[in-house]
Structure formats: structure tokens, C-alpha cells
Image 1 (cartoon, rainbow, N blue to C red):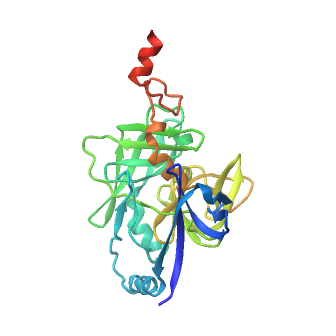
Image 2 (image 1 turned 180 degrees about the horizontal axis):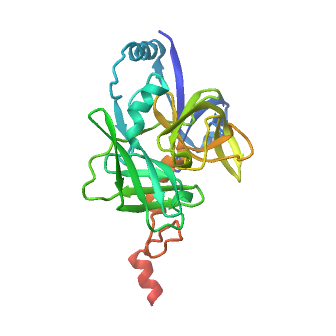
Image 3 (image 1 turned 180 degrees about the vertical axis):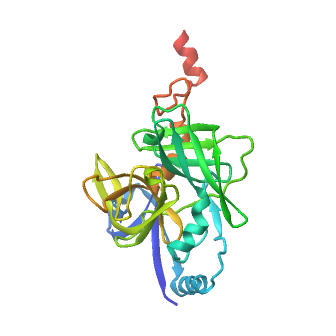
Length: 315
């Protein structure tokens, strides 16, 4: 049985870690490909290198079994360390866009404000959802429309008690929560990995371009590292239009790999999405980006100093 190396985890002395593919390991340094650049790490800073392997034959057989089985079976799910969002517990088999849309449609929402609308997606059953910051920027009245599936039919429900939990203006992401008293447990999406994508892989977006809710557009990944305004974006041929902003970009395994946020208006098939790794970082550190009603224009919350520091400053 042959083995295929997965990404290596390099534990550093400062308790940080780097995940990537080891390209070269020399006597005094290690070169690691992290997707959009190559890091050269001195061995003096490395505590341990963990290389996970998995049996290829077993992976192939699992994928074949998933394809052969025509059942819409829920994939195994694992929660992150924060327990706030989820991913797949194993490599999922690719499926058709039609099958995936039927499975994922309930978790994609429309975000409405008095000045416009955008899209979003629910990340856990408690009604937390992701959208773009520019969709809600400067707004005080936000509503979210969810399409619940009941008896094989979709029923549109509008929720008006929406709370802003965290925002990152510079990363163009926002975390909202549906607080309506009659809100049920929500269907949610799984977050995947943009790093695992390859140029040419199939992707699709679900959103509300120009207010046309539940619109699906399909394309491929054009590049993983399109640099614009100092940030790296996924570029896709899937059509992205105003109203798609904040919606999910899925791979063909049904996992979110990006958040659609812009397009080039004078061209076709030139859409862009924020890589999901940036969204995960935002969610994992959401307390640092907590929204404050006392200072709504600031994306950061400032903590009180420790008691010893506060006391010394008063003396």
C-alpha cells in the first residue's frame, strides 16, 4: 500500500506553528511552501516537524464508495478548537453542483439593509453568519432572509433581530447573529480549505446578485494568489455581481473555500473571493474584532488594563 504525504506541521519555539509542504530540508534551515509563498525557517527555531500520511488506496476506496452511493448522507463533521464553526471529518467525494445546491441552499442567506442587499452564509446552528463588512457598513437596521426547507418546499422567513458580533473593515468580513425569539436551529455550511485548491478546480457561488435570490453560478478557480490592494484573493470565472457580496464560494465537495466580495466591472468572468483561511482567522480571533455599540466605527475592542497597571497609573 502506497502513502501520500499531507501537509507538514512545523512547531516553532514561540509556540506558533506553520502548516505547509516541506520543499527542502537542509542542515540549518527548512523551506516550506504555504500556498502563496515559500518560507525559509532556521532549524534553530524549530521544535518539531510532524508529517501526517494517509493510505492512498484507502482514500480512493472511500471516495469511490461515496460516489457509488447515491444517498444524500450527511458527512462526518468535526468542530474546531473554538467549537464555533465546523469542517468535514474526512476528505469528501466530489458531487454535482445540482446535488450540492439542494444540500446547501438553506444555509445561504440574503442580508438586507435600507440601502441595499448582499448575501451571507450560516456557520453554526445558533444562527451566526458571515457576510462582507461593506454589506452592513454604516447600517443600523439589518434583516436576514433564510429559506427553510419544509416538506420538500422552501419557505422564506425574514429575521429582523440581527446583532453585529464582530467586524474587520480591512478584511471586509463581518460576523452577525440572528437573535429572533422564534428562530429555530439553523442548517449551516462546512468550512474547507482554499490552500487545498488547485488552479482549474471547479467552484460555484450561491447568492443574490441584483436581488435575484438563490442564484447559482459555476466556474473554475483561475488563480489562488491574485494580489489586489496588498491582499491575496481567489480569482474565479464563476459570475459575481452586486448582491453576491458576502456569499459563499464552494468547492465541489460542498465546503466553503471563499467569501465572494468583488468583480471587475468592465470584464466578464473576473470575480474574486476572500480565502476561507482569512475567515477562519477572523472567527478564531473574533474577540479582538468585537463590535462595540459605544464605538461602532472601530473594528477593535480595547480591553481594560490589568488591575496592577491601572492602580499604578492612578498613583
